[in-house]
Length: 287
Length: 253
Image (cartoon, rainbow over all chains, first blue to last red; front, side):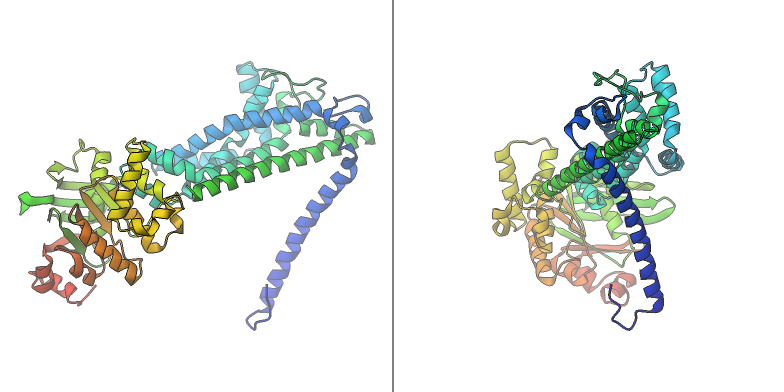
């Protein structure tokens, strides 16, 4: 930003200052949060804590079941929600004709993306835990979280699909491609980087969700490693929530440790997403 | 003339919802020649071109009536195999649109759609198509480079090669040189003249000099109607209609 030229007015300066102040405010808040978590949780970054099981004694307690629970959930959610989300997005963008039905579905989708996560917890409880009789299992939890992020995955994928230039589609059709050929050889490959970015962002949100899982009846005290789709489970945010509600300050330190690891997990997932995207983009440019 | 024509259209009308873009267009396009379609912006030139390979099917609310026969086969009937039609009637667009893939993958795209996997054959066809497009000598060492690394003129010739790779008998060109510099334009024109030995070419152009230079026949469109068509020399010399004469002699447009 340069103010050397004469056209810079006072109004411009004020607006610039306002933007700067607001941005620093947001950044400061983030720094304080991360700083506080690191300050009280950094001590917990050791193997005993990572590989330990919950305990009544704060200093012996670890997060292994929660860490694995979160990892399983994320994996299952990705496997369930990304394919369904991408296919729905393709249906929206490539097959559905413009008209009242599309409009209605579109409004529906955007509303669903804004529904509070606790509502999905209640739906999951009724449908997966009770009707399908999956119990308070990892599978029920993963399906519920998949429902929760599905609208976000669909919206992000639609956006990515819309970014594929119409001229590519035209070129493909003009060479005798069918709709399927065009979707398979042009639309999906060229929208994949965007789809992956959007899906990763949605998954990041899923990692941090506690409310719908608690609503399903995920356990808060799990002293074993989940051993399959139907095993009871807990996750990092639930574990942190559980510890934070204890009166003893030692447990609060554990909570900070769990949150720190959650953040690290988030960073890992995001970086993986970026890596995959960069790799795909590179491959696309070179064929 | 009609029986020796590659393409015969009768009373072709096109609607985009309630808007009538073409009004009863009836023309003959002789085989192995170049037909230029000229006319002011918005007169329906491109829309007409897109009827010939049924690209208008892709637009919601587009409806075509009348008859289009390409080498005797009715294009507008429901029994027409659109995929087969588009292989026989290739298209080159105004803005060059190579895929962000390698040069090789671009040219081989249409062949791979046909299910051809044989590497030797693909290489043979890619070389042949690039030669026809006058591009082989320039880029034969760069077949595995991204098509986006080529210059604008090369990209457009690559698109022509891509269209030629599936052996079309008709090539539709929608202002293929309008975004290019004079040198690249000259190359494209030279190429078009060369290509008419093997394919029938219909080219939409804004550039009257270009139409005069390269076309054998010319059709003048105005407000969605074909005002007049005939040999280029006649259209640019002594057209039958006042409107054609006004346009080609620069009174409007």
